[in-house]
Image (cartoon, rainbow, N blue to C red; front, side, top):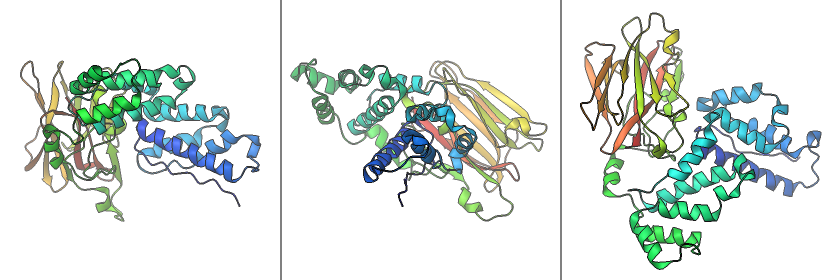
Length: 387
């Protein structure tokens, strides 16, 4: 009996990851159509058949739980039996209504700077793929076509590559392939020393809250302190929630601007209960601490407003018992003046753990685990973006 088998989707909720999953679903469906050319599609719609099967492959666990809930509660007729409409709606549901505008901005502003050629070219190609598979592809192929892509790739690359290509080729007639090859030859394929030194502070990737590596969108997730969800597996007293701010951050770390406001929360037991972040020119702000601070009785809070150019570079966790975060202190650096420090709750913990961003990076969010049972943060790590 013929059966369409599609890949499951469990995150991360980034434009790149979602685009790759949607492309794989489409490719598998095309193979299915070749294998079963006489298959009778329910309601006579191939797109509807693909939409139903893809939606049912969204994981109900982890970061895609809310997306799975949305899928189950959405009438299939809302997609007009159209695969492109389904793609657009699921991206908007996951990434916000302005996801395409942010992706376009990243596409036109992503620069190589000190990165190796392979990383830079991969990032640009991923952005190009997202755009070419979006609704905008129906409007103007010029946005992601070879001519525009060639100029973007060249003029945002390292100066050495730009000089060599302009000296050797007619920029009007040079091919995309020639530009790629010259960028790879003119710039190192391995990360420069300034980034290689940071790699010792990161380890294998994991989206569940344990130590992580370079995210495909250019963020890094270095040292992680505390427990992981696997430590509580089978415990009748634990209601563990994994959280990861990567799901709220802009697509592509190099498009991120500054953190403008940070709020730290405490509960009635004078214990750290959550935080909220606001980003400049970003459609989303978010609160972490599950349940959010608004649901915690007698919640207290303290705020810090960051100035233009100021950024978070050190986070200090206070704890009295192992893997039981009691307080958080945020420390900033300001190139134009003195930095700031905010701690809440304002207590003197028995022990502290300091997490710091390496040179050239700033803290833009966190990841970790929260125990809903006792409302305690049991682990936390940084998410970093380049300055």
